[in-house]
Length: 223
Figure 1 (cartoon, rainbow, N blue to C red):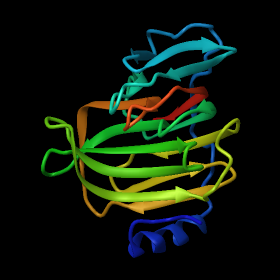
Figure 2 (spheres, helix red, strand yellow; figure 1 turned 90 degrees about the horizontal axis):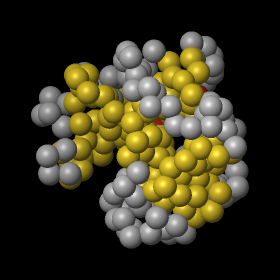
Figure 3 (cartoon, rainbow, N blue to C red; figure 1 turned 180 degrees about the vertical axis):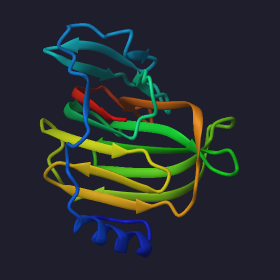
Figure 4 (cartoon, helix red, strand yellow; figure 1 turned 90 degrees about the vertical axis):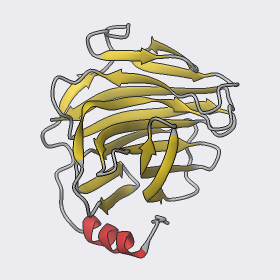
């Protein structure tokens, strides 16, 4: 069952699911990792908590134990504003609360807080969730939550490949997992686009758990 954070959003979800939206229209392949190495013209690397490599034409993350609240990423180097990201992810093995996720910080609200979105596979709780909230970057503290929703729970996370999608707009927000459905959220506010937007794929543990091995492949963007 999809879990939404408030009743208004549930109504939007029901409406959104009934709307026919082309799933792959306008997508551009960003990286399929077939080169055998991480392309420095496409990615910045943050490997402070995970070993990141290319294996079998996929980006491999091995998240290490002992790095509480320290994420690792491959960060996109887009040449223009990104409207959405689509990627395949698979959690091969995982211990503890490590999340395998697609994330973006594209907007700021009227108080200057970063509005960040993430779509995360959570093997520990056997679910994939979508979150949107405000971050005080200076103090590294979440200020408020706009939306939290789960795709059906429990689902088999370990060993399964999921094609996931997350949009970055300033009004209607959307997250999708093939075979599980869509989550829609109306922000109800107009945000300002950051000068240095952040889009990434990667891993994070709140408690410093691990290890966790995950793979990403076929990253597409919509401009």
